[in-house]
Length: 253
Image (cartoon, rainbow, N blue to C red; front, top):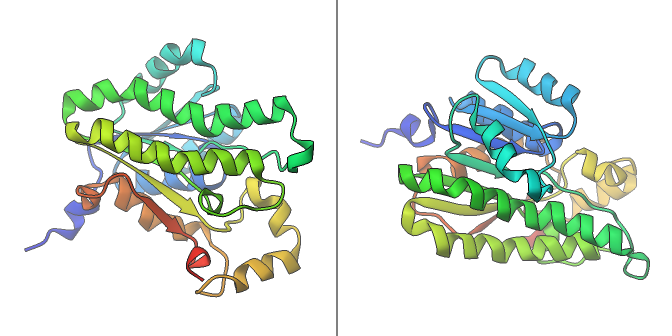
């Protein structure tokens, strides 16, 4: 018989979620904890992180830190591992979209976008992988985007990073999956988060986006639960190097 509960259960696993202070990162932290994982949230805003931990309870902790600061990466990894041990799962949900048009992109805007959206997921994963290798089990989940494969106005820097995330995910799988570590990415459609506030503050625009999906609506936070649990659990043991689009069929239409 198939033990469905065991496929998705994360009891005994430690997960770290970047960008856990809000949006899909916050929701991922809550979902992983509900499945039995001990969760460490990482972000720069302490009050919001504390709020997530209060909602989850004893199985959550947080670290206030900047994942783009490579000089402090060893200290960050040490702090992440302190509450429950070295992570088995890392979810890279931290991200930024400066929404600068191509003609208006600044070097500063470009650099901060690449640093947070692309460089941080690689270097933090690289630092956490040795402990996963030692256990022979690990899960890396990156956050891709509709812009992994499609160009949107005002998104050239963001889109460049999300296109690169697709290839980074495949390269991570090639490098680390022989050691029992899978690497996959979730590509969200339009969800109501801080990053998409500009979209959802315009009802007509939000409605147009919903109409472009196969399902006929934009995403809700609950829609991310199943995909994140799938990619972080034994249910996806033979899935690696993939981008799972969670977009209501936006990219299929």
